Length: 101
Image 1 (cartoon, rainbow, N blue to C red):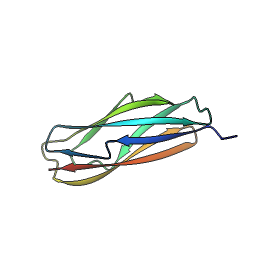
Image 2: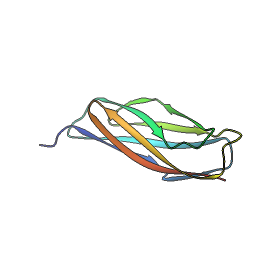
Image 3: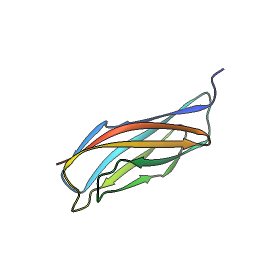
Image 4: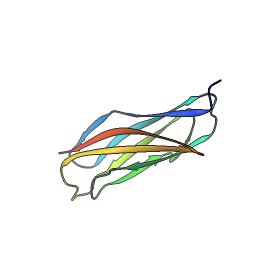
């Protein structure tokens, strides 16, 4: 029997932005009958940027929208984002790339 667990994926895997917003979809899958909620966070944002998950906590299975707001002084470059999902003692991560032009 498979233990209750979840999976996490971010699409698209790479997003290009010049200003304003960059949006990703975070998809939570379930394994072994997990029925809890998953809290989401993101690391690796560029300087001057902020992030918002809608909703910040989702059920498994479920999905959330991650919007990265670029600031006026966000420097160009490639940034490796790490999205983390936590459900009790279970922690999983998925990666995405943000390219600011």
